[in-house]
Length: 366
Image 1 (cartoon, rainbow, N blue to C red):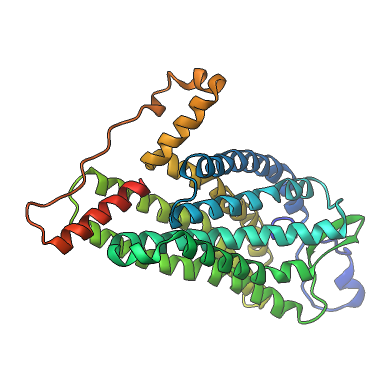
Image 2 (tube, rainbow, N blue to C red; image 1 turned 45 degrees about the vertical axis):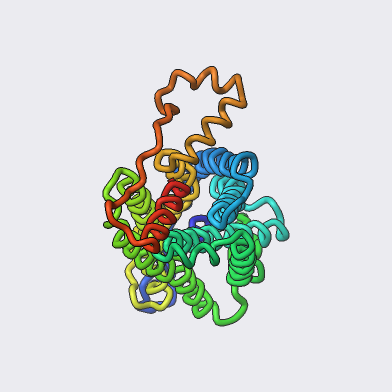
């Protein structure tokens, strides 16, 4: 966890003059911890509350109404669980940012590991959902055989296994220790510390941004290309959802990965300037917190851009009479009739079959 790993540095005022060496004084960062104490706890609390509420509603809807009847439902469930796993670690990090680590060594290792598992699995399942949409729309006939609940469960188990494996360094190397009357919880390497820090940063950049973004851009560019044949509002809704997913992913994760890459250059001593390092530490706190917010946004995307999901949310509120009475006058929950599927006056039997399959998957996604 980067935002809480920044320790204050105290330096003797007469260090250089006493030893008569012409070395630069170590970079002091006294204000960074104070900035984190003020800025991070309330943000973490809000992310925790909204992430818990939104993703819990997704889980309830999937079990109560959709009953996991498709690969998409399986991936949505796992994505919500990933986000929940991630937000469950935030109260611990919030308290840590405000004060110090008081939860002991075991929880330090477990929470660090849970945080990383939620981080990686969430991004992996967003990527899998991109592939799922790609198969459903671009390879509609093939997807009838490939996009089953069984394959969804198998790929989900494999994805969780990969997320657990790549998160093991967080479990192994995370430790708590006391320094200058302050207890820390962070990764501490007994050998090759610089190499491990660089490898960890590169792992997050490659597995957390470069590979997922490449897959998403390919899948969604092919989807948009296929949807050019569908000239109605349903196509426009699908394109809007695609645009929202990609833009939000880029907007919330790219700044964090860029700062992490710059921090890697600092670790390698490619960049060495005290003022720059101070700005970089502040940027790490801000961009990592911005990335945390992304786990709250998936339910929002599904609600505002997904017609079927919005319908289920309304039904869920209707089943809770007290809540629905407060919301029934809100125009946000008004339902609209389904759009007419895109069609053409002339289709061969195979193209008609493919087109109807695309329409069905568009309707299911929306």
